[in-house]
Length: 134
Image 1: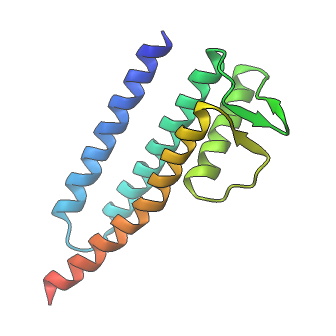
Image 2 (image 1 turned 135 degrees about the vertical axis):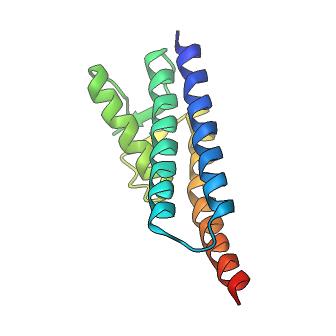
């Protein structure tokens, strides 16, 4: 069941990225619509990675440690922890009270890389749109 949910998350993420790419390729300036799309793209990335962390945690893999202990608690507590860790990783804050271990390190690195690269792409697109007008 976890595999099916993971596959659905990946499909949703790909569709969100596709919609964002289409919106960026058609827009010349950063508009309100573009800001909304960027916000939803960040939200989709954040939720997708938190669901990956949650699925792995619920499947018995220890990929996150909170204050030196494996993430435990009710489903909602684990969801909250995974969402928080995903947000802290995506936005490059990294407070350090939750740390990835094992396969979680690789997943966190991929998420952090996306978190670093997305603003670069957004700024590059905005600057290239300004150059086209001149």
